[in-house]
Image (tube, rainbow, N blue to C red; front, top):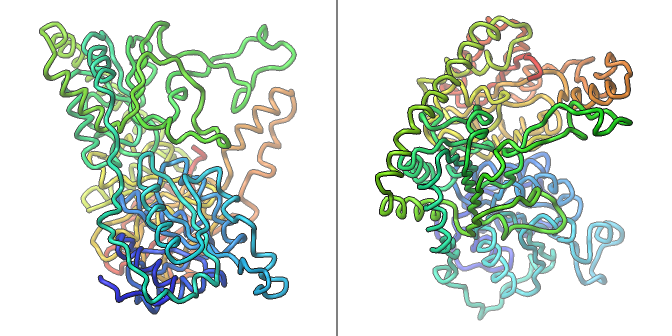
Length: 598
């Protein structure tokens, strides 16, 4: 869609977003973005970008995250001055942690103080509004003048989309938004403002990594988020098949089919205990994989028993002493001082700063050219043992579900995952968000990154991420599945309005344990350590009395609601009914299933 020449500065912003291919602009409206809002609706025709009405800024930002995870395309979110930005800040922080590119656009009251309305413009105007989120965005700007606005939008897009990707924030004075463009204003040629290509790895470091892989007796490859990049999964598979190395996935993103015989995720301890080489690609926090919690010793801290959950646990290395470590990625470029998301610094034998997909391709090419008879034999000899670890793992999991978990009351998370799979397995499905304690990854056939969005965090962002991803498939025959935590949805129940208003169809399955259960473990640990009663651990944690009826809540927004479902035998029929509504009526169905805490 090509727009006419812009007339106002806010038209210019819409023109640039349109040229950049931005499809949607989720927002919670406000006065300080009124110029931009009007331009999107009347100048832009509410197309490219189309406004998506949200009842909370946290949802608006989370939707941009979900859309990116589903499509790889950056979106914008609008936030009304200081108050909107503060609401949005939690989701912006999640986007920063997950390396999600987006542009958050905000307005501020008139910077010329003599033009401000009494009271309201003063309390909604800050000296530098971006200060609120500066510590967890890649860049922020508050441009003055039409030319500066154009350059700021283009720079914001480039910075957000340059690896490692992340959110940026732009703030526009309300009067600047509503100002006319100069008659002689020259529109930029966007073909000359390209996102820079990601760097490859240093050739010598790549050779070192390839040599280490070929010489290792028991290498392990640990990966995170490779499936988000087109060709990432294929690149990983080509390397592991060549060198015969097991793969451990971390994080929620797709990397390798769970049916691949070298994917041993879930058998981490078994493969790490004998490794002599760890290759980590795209891993944001390697410590979580290379350490394990151990039983505490009273000799360590006799005056204070070690916690059994959360803080004060004792950790030890999960790998043998002397194991070589190779780290690949661009994480070091994204480190900032305020958030500690980078984790502990670990000793590393080879560190390669470069796009992990490109580096893995380089390593594969070196190995293909350099593998001798000895390294090929080591690779071939390893595969049967790794394959057995893989098959034994899945045999144990399926046996556990059948013999121990199937008939439990309340319904086990494993059974719920199996029931969902039975209903969707023959559909063109995509998991747009959520997890059932990892059982969906163990029991479903996960062999295609296009089916596995499954990103985002909690405490309010979960449904927003799901909506953004499902928005990408609106108007298609995709069956979007969202596994939604009860506590998370209670943060942003207004998300159900957006689903209904914008005709976003999802099969929403509630992971309803009627509790903020994470804190049960923490309260149990503290009470036990202090030798106090554990009968009180549910106070301030449980979400009953009343127990929310999410099916009725969904119906109040005009969506389909089924449940609450207490009997596991009723889950399958309810899911089938919900699937029929999603497919044939193209609207969201919320299935309220009451399940175990984990």
